[in-house]
Amino acid sequence: MQIQTLGDLFAHPSFQTLFLAILIVFANIIIGVSMLPEDRRKRWYRLHRYVYVAAVAMLGLFLYVNHQLQGNDGFVYFVAAYFLTAIPFSRKMNVTLHAVISSVGLVLLIGMAALSVL
Image (tube, rainbow, N blue to C red):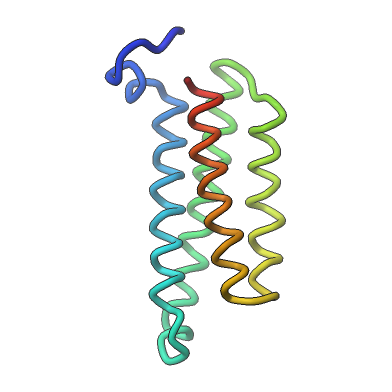
């Protein structure tokens, strides 16, 4: 299906799931930045983890829907592997490095929206 209008884009099921994943990752980055002060870190950590799990679940739903509609390519699997490996391992290193790696993940999701759905 060739997407020609903005309405067609937002009606496409794989774009809807990817758009929700982008919004959830953006919300998780905002939660992570807001918990930077030491006194807020313990209270917000559980919410930060649950929102990350929701983002990975939405990414998995996108993989399923996109596979059913048009098939996945290597870049889509690379982004999924990045979210499953690089982001969780970076949280043990440094808080700032974890924020940068998570932001790169958001950019990869936006690139995936531009390359795989359009």
